[in-house]
Length: 125
Image (cartoon, rainbow, N blue to C red; front, side, top):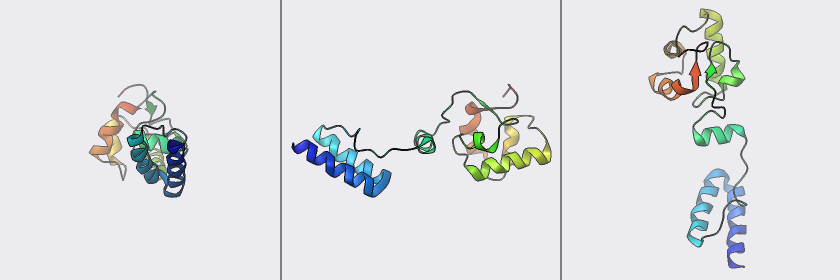
């Protein structure tokens, strides 16, 4: 019963404090050896993607064909940068290589490095 009481408190803490509360609850429950599975708050696809730092789909995204919604599933790309990529593509035409993505405001070398394995331009890198 003692473990169930800790899990109940952890669940309340997780709901009240969001993900940060869940992390604290996980630390408390790990000490006691109980499972946190029922106490963790549910996260949608975006939350899971952000936590893992990866696109949910393992197939590379063609940055010349993808819409803003698909681009937003990439690690480090939110709705704003995704829309800028689409606008850049409309204004300048198709990307010739993934390296050209750094011309989009908000995409630098560091982000491009994280994206390389997740993107393609028409079937080639």
